Structure formats: C-alpha cells, structure tokens
Image: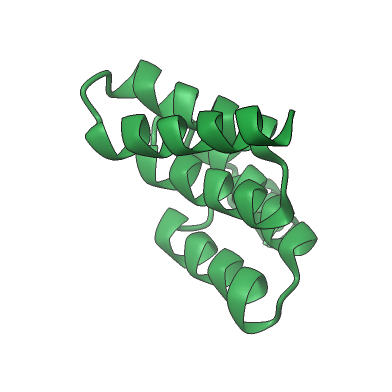
Amino acid sequence: MVNYSAKIKKELFFDTKPDQSFVNTIGYVALYDRELPDIAISIFELNTKNYPQSINVWDSLAEAYTVRGYMDKAKKCYEKILTLSPTNNTAKMKLEELNSKIRQRN
C-alpha cells in the first residue's frame, strides 16, 4: 500500500493515501482471521499516520495493542481519542477497563 501510494505520488504529482476503511479491514483480517497481531499493529499504525484525526483508526490500533497485551500503548490510544472527542463514552469505558487491568497486573 505504501509503495503504491508513493508510485502514484511520483507519477501523478499528487499525494494519495489508501482509504482508511480499506486499511482498517486489512488490519482486522490480520488481527483476527490470520492471527497476526504484530502485522495488524503495523497496518493500524499506518492508518493513524494517514488519518490522525480519525477516532476509528485510533480505536482499531488500541484494540490491536490490547489483543497483543500492550496495555500501556492501548491506553495512550484511548487518551488520544479523548483529546479528539472528550465526550466519547466508549473510549472512557475502555480506558477505565484498561486501567483496571493495569492495576491488577501490577
């Protein structure tokens, strides 16, 4: 995807990004269907770079981090969502759940 975008940018003289929904779908296929959480994380990270204001892509990355056991990284994603949408109740709830898991772990 990245190489394809770079090729289009070079040949057509404008920047293009892969569609965030398409990238998210590929990320979830890697995460759940193929059980490749590290690849899914890379895919979701790419999406957050391309669409840093999208709550959905941050939520997907947080989910992948949680599946992988990276609770602190997931927590940062939910905090990012709350900077973008301070009243996002889903992010608040997931952040509370993560904080509880982190406390139990320590």
